[in-house]
Image 1 (cartoon, rainbow, N blue to C red):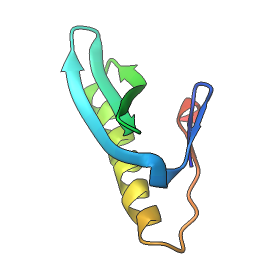
Image 2 (image 1 turned 90 degrees about the vertical axis):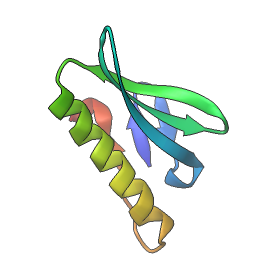
Image 3 (image 1 turned 45 degrees about the vertical axis):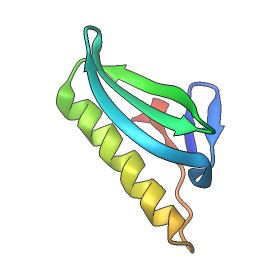
Image 4 (image 1 turned 120 degrees about the vertical axis):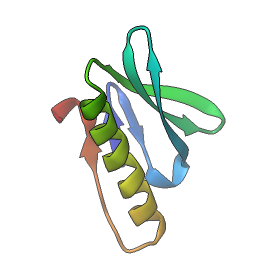
Length: 76
């Protein structure tokens, strides 16, 4: 499960993860039921890349079954 802000999203419901650079910083977002949810906007590309990598790796690991992973983004 991915937790951020007031959201709790099951890994199986996340169909994609993206990392884009905007004027405000580096934005990490997920796609849930064809809706884009912004996980966060980070001033550092390395921080955003780290968050992206953790979400993507956890999503893939959970999709292979037998893995329980909970990440609370607000704590990172």
